[in-house]
Image 1 (cartoon, one colour):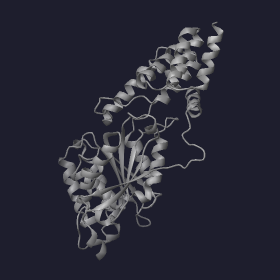
Image 2 (cartoon, rainbow, N blue to C red; image 1 turned 180 degrees about the vertical axis):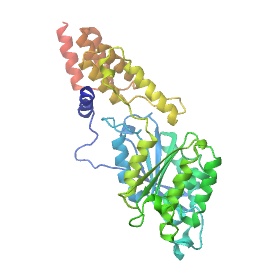
Image 3 (cartoon, rainbow, N blue to C red; image 1 turned 90 degrees about the horizontal axis):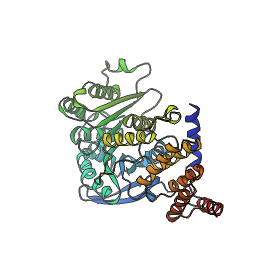
Image 4 (cartoon, one colour; image 1 turned 135 degrees about the vertical axis):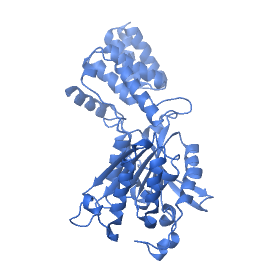
Length: 416
């Protein structure tokens, strides 16, 4: 455990900082699409991973976020934190596409209604455009994003409340568009629970192998009532939590369909406060085996093949999540992580493991200079000055580096 804590310490102080002084921090690029399907111009917000500015070939999964005007900043910051290599790395870096509303009721409700619980005349008149909005996402928004950015075919859809029912409608009626779905407090009571009944049928007969869904429920129960009691209730005021719990039952009772499903109830959160914590938990569930798990023996046992372990882990998650691009380039062990592991092993004088780390990075990231500089340090420590000089020179060919330049000059002076 002490070794792992020290390793985390190394990560946090050896990674470059991306913030710059006297410059604004821009969290998103604002774009727009003239939609022929919706007959209007739609704004979209795009947040790119930090590494996208330096690795021009890397491709990313894409998270599509409904109601962006309310939750975009929180979700973008959370994913940046969870995907960072400074000891987190719980999920992959992602492109985040936020879709702010123009007519929320129209776009997020799957069917048109004339009357019903919680629905006024204006809401009814505006309802039922969910299928058109889904077509907009599939035929216009997704192709637009894929044409502009380096994307992987792994896509997630996140929605809350009315957005949550659109998420479930997409899962049930258009499951091919996204790989993962997050429905937070979905309004399954809509249209006399029409979609809820359709979901029951679809989950019994459909095939959702390779897809996942996370269902989140906040505490909207009457005082003194728990989730068991509310399922037996019949008054109109409890139809919202009852409908979500019934959806939960459908999701969990159909393992034959291959859908990887999870449900979580948040007794201390309201309908409005649940989205951020639910998104956090959903990312942990969907990418539950994404994070690297280290043991002290990986660093103390000379026979443990650390490089092979890293390669096997990223090959596995590439295959599981479809993180393999058209050019067959699987998800690679992150450059900063591998350099830091190599540096750590070099400090422990396990030069063989350290060399494997640096040579792995040179193969995977041939334009990176730091692995060459570290290799120079490694061969200098071994007493192989000629090979050390060659690596320092290669590092400097790729990028001018004050430290590498000084080490090269000092080494050349010592061999004269």
